[in-house]
Image (cartoon, rainbow, N blue to C red; front, side, top):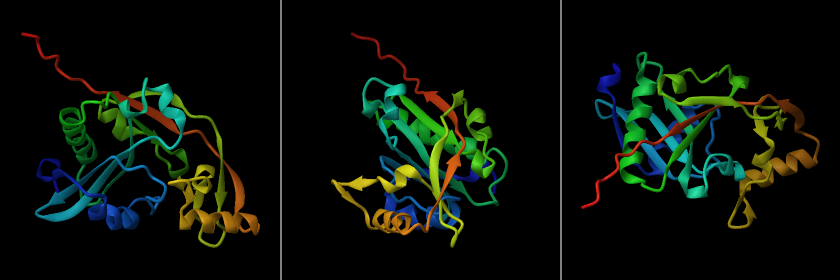
Length: 201
């Protein structure tokens, strides 16, 4: 499955939700703000997915003057059969689409989580600029499943209400069934979109 054989196209989140939740290490997109989604196909079969959205907090203020100018690469997953450089090629195609079709977006941010042994190699290969690490934060581990949740997952609201999965997590926390842990800072990368200026006539 060579990089040039992969076909990247915009899609609806419903088309890739199950694929992401099966194959991404987070196994979830709950609480993720969704702005743009892309499916990756090989010979008409889904083999990858990419999801961009707004940052979870007001962290966008570090990267732009208005929230609409900043996107975060929230999920990226390809099957293991995809060969070397496939990720950077897929990211490049997504960025080209966003550059052409989302004129308000100026900056794309992505984080690599050292908790999963990620340091951001694919972002370096995609010409993102490394700007340092985020601060340490608090997480909660479910000892039954081994899954770790960021503290903001327990604060996520939709239209002013906690989502069902948030209510479940908060109930587990109140029952003392989640273990507080310290999360190391993530590696932060930034990509500035380049657009050609159209000459005025």
